[in-house]
Amino acid sequence: MKKYDYALVSGGFDPVHIGHVQMFKEAGILADNVVVLLNSDEWLIRKKGKAFMDAEHRKAILDELKCVTKVIIQSSDADNSSSNAIMNFAIQHNEAKICFCNGGDRKDNKTIRESETCNQYNVALEYGVGGSYKAASSSDLLDKYTTDVVERPWGRYKQLYTGDGYVVKELIVDPGKELSDQFHFHRSEHWIVLEGIGQLKQGATRQMPEREFYIPEGESVFIRPAQTHKLKNPGQIPLRIVEVWAGRILKEADIERLDVGPNYGE
Image (cartoon, rainbow, N blue to C red; front, side, top):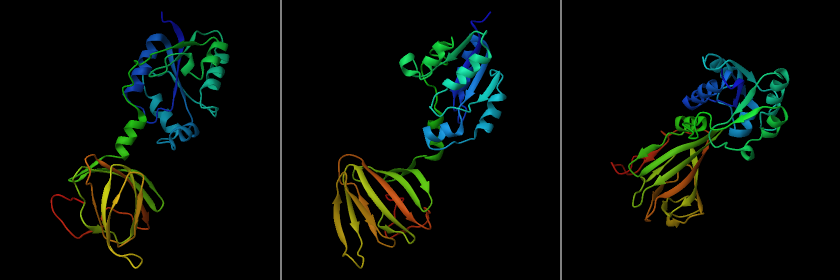
């Protein structure tokens, strides 16, 4: 005979990964039934900025897992907790033995928003379900998929965000390395140095002559469309830059290199 009739597990599960499945399985060791309290799309937007899959799609996937008895989409999680869903379930099953499962870094009442509701409705708190080590993170999986690091001879970059008319990237230029002398027809670029120091050779425009100068940490520079520029890291530590593209055509192919070779790549 198992310890509980129902084990409640809450989360966004967007997307579902092996760490979630492990948690469901261990919850099934504690209780005859595993009930997933699925957070809403609005909860995901507040937490992560967007929902990768909507609630109905996430529910459909979870419903197919043998270790899950039932999936309930939470209709009231505006307080960023599952307290209302726990309360409603406890009221509907007031004679059942119920626990609320917590995994990862949720180790005591101080880190669990729902603890007061659980105590009020006689729902036991179980800790370390699925293991204390967080095997995977939905956010990490999505970040790896959408922001893969691209290696270059001079270092690496990854795309952080794409919006309507702009792109945000992070560039890491290794010490002593440089990018090609280049320009872009359709986009401007705004660079902000987060770490290290950059050395920039910037082509002439109608407003200014050609110049070569250093960009220290915390400073920024604006590069106009069709303006030549050549970046180098003269320092001893990696040069980390946030690069913002702006324009109507934002493609990697929009580049003309004035010097080429195996040491550049871009």
